[in-house]
Image 1: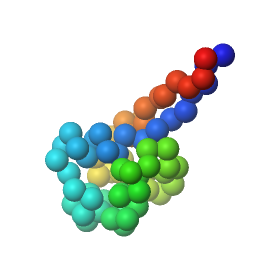
Image 2: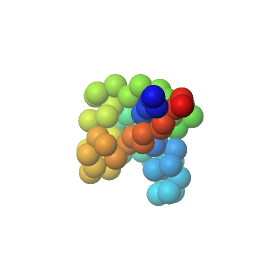
Image 3: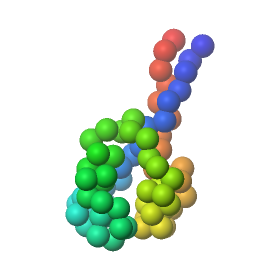
Image 4: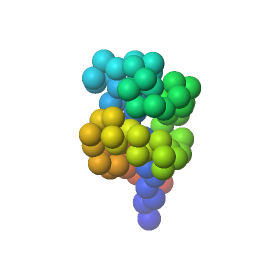
Length: 73
C-alpha cells in the first residue's frame, strides 16, 4: 500500500515569483527565519498562525502551499 506525505511548496512558490525571504517576511508579518526554514525544509510543519498569514499574503487557500508525495510501494 502506498503512503503519502505532504510537503510545503514555499521554495517553489517563492522561486517562481522572484520573492525573497525578507520581502515575504515584511509583507506577511512572519519572521524571516521562519520563511527560510520553510523553504529549506519542505517537510517542516507549518503552524496554523503562519499558514493563515501566508494565505492572507498570497491571497490563497491553504491547499496552495502543499503538495502530495507518494512514498513506499
